Amino acid sequence: MKPTLSHRHSPAQYVSYVVGFILSIVTTVLAYYLVVNEVWPKEMLIYVVMGIAVVQLVVQLVFFLHLGRGSRWKLLTFWFALLVVLVVVVGSLWIMHNLDYNMMNMSPDQMEQYMVENEGI
Amino acid sequence: MSRAEEEVANQEKKTLGFWIYLMTDCVLFAALFATFAVLRGNTAGGPSGLEIFDLPFVLVETMLLLTSSFTIGMALLGSVRGYHKQTIFWLIATFALGVAFLSMELYEFNMLVAEGNSWQQSGFLSAYFTLVGAHGLHIAVGLLWMAVLLIRLVHFKFRKTDINRLALLGLFWHFLDVVWIFIFTIVYLVGGMA
Image (cartoon, rainbow over all chains, first blue to last red):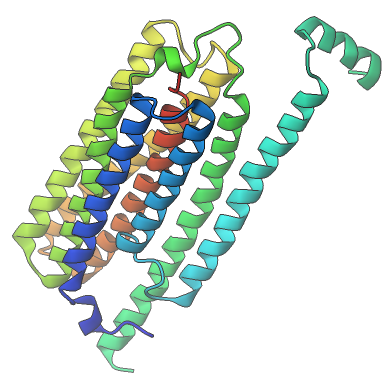
């Protein structure tokens, strides 16, 4: 639906900002509390904290950035950007960890020797 | 199309253009986040995040930025409703919070460099300074934009173009808030885990 002028003046927007603000404060403090008090072992805590960050991303997108309102292209470009972001981040981590794995247990000296011998660097 | 409708459609186009810029900025930050995530463990004998991050300090920074995101929303709502005093009040509050955030960040950088943990120390610290510094630079530019806009709003008595610009500044500011949430989580919380 195309937003009309009256649409923009709806009092519901104040509520949207207040709710978004409260939710983002709560999620931030929750993540901080969990980490500082080491509620769970580290491996699990990383996933929990990342999950909370994603929740907060959604909160900010909905309540502050009003994603989904306005032009349809806004949503489309957002999904595309998200795709690129995921490819860049997940791809980098995947490739670099794979490299790391293949070169495991090598000291810098050994690695240099390996590169000189096998890669011609 | 009437004149008012035309204006709304025009502003809609500008908002979309600015939104697409923000999405490209997302990709820039994704590259920096990926770099940081890859280099996180490469401390080269220097300190890890656990040793140098002051979490309570960073929590205060985060709260300042979250609050500023809320206050700029209030300024935005005030401006479209024609409440001039309210807009100016909330905008000055946002500006003050932004300056406080940036000062804290610069203080933190200064402390790290003074302790010998500058970007030259290790891959981890290079990536850290680049990522957090890039966000700080965005905040600085946003503050400059906000200052100019404040002067224009007061001087030209809330011209329609300036009110439209405020809406774009609001988008920019919320976007920086979102980026910071991920810096807070990935760099500080995960980096500061024992």
